[in-house]
Structure formats: structure tokens, C-alpha cells
Length: 108
Image (cartoon, rainbow, N blue to C red; front, side):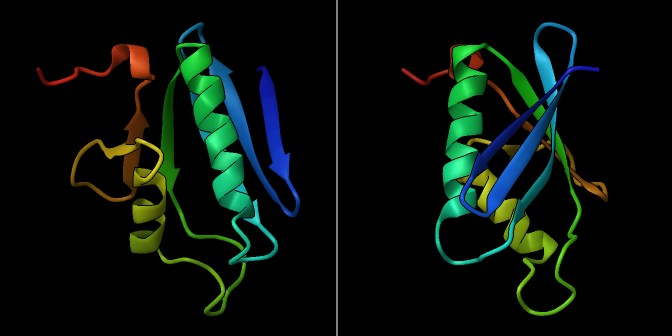
């Protein structure tokens, strides 16, 4: 499988490609919260997906710090929503999809 790592400062994310039009987003992590590094990584990922017409999928799963530093699943869903991810259904674990701007339906 082909992968691509995006990083900025202490934050990183991994895309695993499947087929020509999709990728799974995983391993989104920031060693230093509150500096905007994860946001910048996600902006890079989103821009790359739009430029390459990729549908992104992810499963929200808290990992990393075991204390208050780590975002819980509700916070993670809110974070990914800022980058165009939408919840696929109401099941657990939370599954989200992000369509590239070329595939989004715009209201008149």
C-alpha cells in the first residue's frame, strides 16, 4: 500500500491510499497541543485531497496521552468537521468522510 506522511512541527498525519480516488486518514497526532500544528497539518491534508480529487475516510479513535491533554471523541469529531469531514452514520466507532471540493454539491 502506498502512504504519504504530512507533518508540521510536532504534528503529523498519515494517508493510506486505496484505489485512485480515496485514502484513509490515520495517525493524526500532535506532541504539543494548543500551537495550531495539527490544524496546519490538516490544512495540508485537505488541500492535497482537493488538488488530487481524493475522498478521505477516517475512524475517530482517541489515542496518545491518557490524561486531559488528549482530545476525547466529541472534540475530535468537532476538530475534523472544521476540515470538511462529515459523520457517515450514527454508529460507533465514529466514521467520517470528507469529499473533495470538486465533488461537493453546492446550493444555488
